[in-house]
Length: 98
Image (cartoon, rainbow, N blue to C red; front, side, top):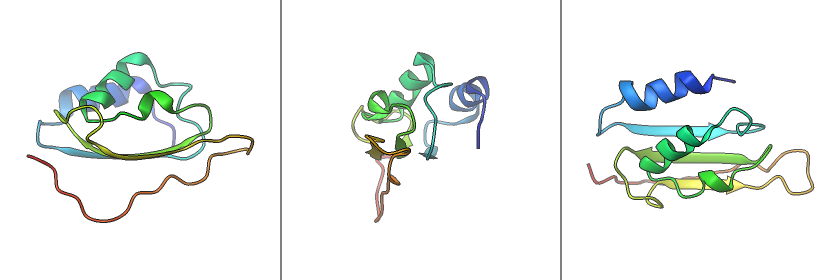
């Protein structure tokens, strides 16, 4: 499903409290509308891999506002020579600090 970046930014900035957890996944294409402001916000939710996501890569992330960069649970699958990246997956249990 495609969402406009302006809506995405509004939700991350205004609608979520500090203790909220986000779960995000993309298969196919998410980079064409993903601007630096959104990338920066996702880093504030702990993402380290978001800057590595390219055209038609797969990406999944569980993060929380205020997590240090690299502390989100995330997976990135590169497209490589295929039409699409393989499904990026995460599994198991987790605990966040807040």
